Length: 481
Image (cartoon, rainbow, N blue to C red; front, side, top):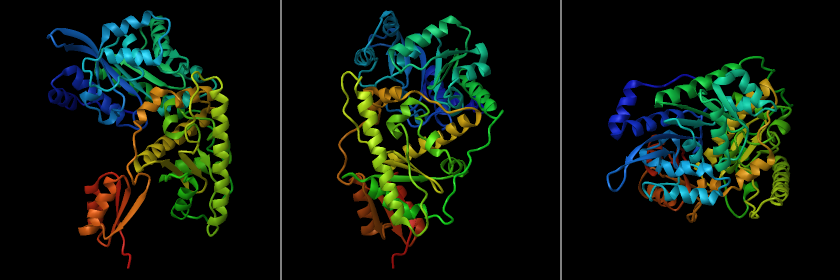
């Protein structure tokens, strides 16, 4: 991994946003967020300590930290809500602080009451003294820290240039522990949060960013050494059904009174992973970093390889696999809910990722967007677990830790659940959809929540029509006559 810092781009961001601190914070946050090897879909966070004017025109020290609901890759200043810093620092004297108290207190100290909720890791950023702080879920670092001896592996690479924080669920307790680890050696350049991610910090945006890039590069270099052979392949049918042949059947098998949208992915790395003889072991251990669980559940469903000409038989085997997945999920929930206080309400037990030997993987979601998010995370998981298994044995956080994160109200809040539109979860196919009544129909269906396939003999016009509708549409050349 190489630094993408550009002095010219940095100056342009400062000029555009009128504040050096905020402009540079937006700039390097986007650099980090633009690389899926570092963060995906709302993951990670950044901050800058600066000064803002209050209503009386007085200077107030503030922490501008990534807000809930914002992606690092396209963040704007509005996605970095300013929180009064002094009140946050006083919280460190407390012995305990509930999540509800933490959120309420942070919101009560926002400079703008209409701003989004500050990150769940706001206090960690506040309790560290550095001006710029970056946090990512680097898959290279996770490949090393998600091991039985993950901390030792990371120490082998970074030595005393980093501090090492054992896994603790994000929030007040983690913030206090991270600050304690830092204070044991204030010369460190960052913190490895074992089985979670990595923090780097600095006096400038460039220093914090380039420390992140350097630490990730070191992890990547370590992953090139002493690698075991790739996954041994399991036997496959001589002829395989295509993704298009099984996808409609899979959607039907998943339907629980509601529809589901699929996003198929494949590549050499994905095929090596899903074709592995031990797929049932390494794919079922858990998510690479806990906040992925709200998007993908804790493990994917493994479906059989589909033999060409035998999709009906495949469907029966896939139905059984999905039923077994649901039974496993029910048992997982019951087992962990016994210790929960207050008790939780079980979420739906359906998978969000399906692995299909011989083909690839499907992301599963209520919308095209949600399915793509699940698929993106699944592909990153493939890369992370592959590297972890190449240098050791993949072992993420415990089942109990995954449950706590999956059912944590502050994580579920990231999903922004609301009332679904009438045609949500449906896929509408509109023929002659590039113009006239067809285009109007496609737009109307998209407005009502459908994912729309715009078909037309003129493929270029179909693609343009789909672009005009938005991200929920797909344009395809097709002559239905």
